[in-house]
Image (cartoon, rainbow, N blue to C red; front, top):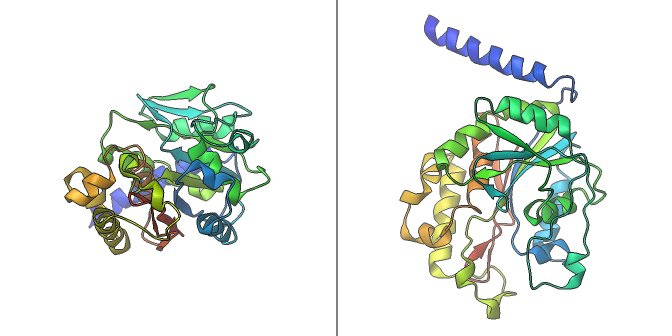
Length: 288
């Protein structure tokens, strides 16, 4: 019993130290929510549809953040990096879309201070302060619906493609202190994301998915709502339907960053929970 108390005390002191280390950057706040956003097609940035409406409705439930840290499927790197520039560029990392999409700019400021504090929190993991990347469409195409005035600073944390699901889940846990400094942490990807099997003829059909996509969505959602995250961390061991849904890990792994930040007092809820074009899902998660 005394040993457990000592461990609990040590954890509490660690959290207090982490909070103190970022106290000069942001004021103390109530605990911020954490999000996983299914970002879908880049066209969601400029279209009016049910998913965009879902993002806007979500925004009405969120406290005003001091800053945003986004883990996007589209920054998949060897090693871990965090953007540290004053003004991140808007990256149009796609092709074959209308000019109107390429014309979109999202001029949110960066936060070199938050980048440095994120690097400190993730120690001893080596984190590179990056001055070149910016905001890719996994970040700006959804954040623009939450904060259309681009008045909240945004940084991105990359996903190290050499590491396991367990590694990413545990790395996210190190960021918990940021939730008490007004930092909204967002994972952006898609749980069901098999681009090779997209049914473009039925792209506009509501909640349309292949049988395996329906099964994969049900499997993942059940684990999410039950709070049973270990099978989701070990996603490579899940059924064949999930393997078809996650042929490559980059769009799935941002979900694990969101789940890694859940504590015992958080309620987990789903929204935009629909399939798209047979082999995609827009399922999104809110912890609050």
